[in-house]
View (cartoon, one colour):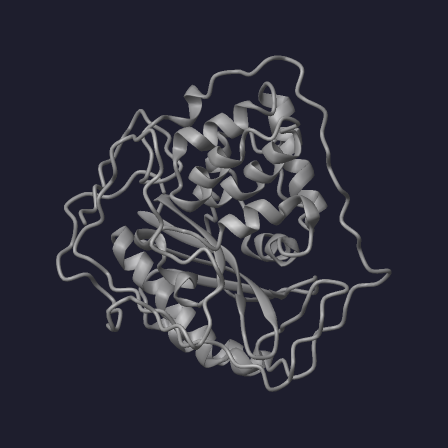
Length: 355
């Protein structure tokens, strides 16, 4: 694989997997289709943090991990089903990049009365195709209509603060704070309108399965792009632990390459696995409680390559190497064993513009 990290001064890209500028999204017809929005069923009061959460241990451990990196490393976790976020570290410029494709996809499927956009959604989520994301966005109507539709999804899934219509930027460049993103991710497995997108988040291609992708059965979406520091790499997702499920938003902003960011998020994922017993976990309302003796499968292995290739635009999606079914401990990972290192063996010569 080769990392093509070319600075495209005139192009606003959402991922290194696409090539069309965000600003070139063609306007859709003035009238958007009727929405099938389903409101989030909220509990009468905010849920209490689950027993067994050791926030001091997590804070101390994450501080030690973050100190080993020169950039800004930050993490937010929320129990699935909802709760107060635990936030560690900070990122000054939390631009959404391709993580915004998750609420865009949900909004588009809400309005997809003919059921034709699911393949497009899968391309936008599983291999982060820019053209597919722009097709989904333009299906929501003209700019203000599309922004409102995405804002409604964000608000319906527990994020009352993030807004495209207030940001006045291309959708990939909107600010999405980690604590708000973790709240949103905590509702993804619970909200009926999010189910198709959530399932697609379990089928991300191998090249983008760094970070949270090392957890078997993880549902996640990543993004990366330029920042004032240099490069921002981030992910949102839901991971499974022996106690229950937790929503995660994580980001690393530095003057180094994308690959170093991928490695940093992978190390955070390993740290989460090592501290799983201290995390705030939960479940969707009405879900069957997880057995106390439940175990999880071993972590997958992700190995940083010297470069990651930027694929040429294709008419069909590349075949995912991740299983479409939830992995189990009886089915070992097919990835060859390796331990991620902080830096790739060969650094790319240029930086990716967006991811």
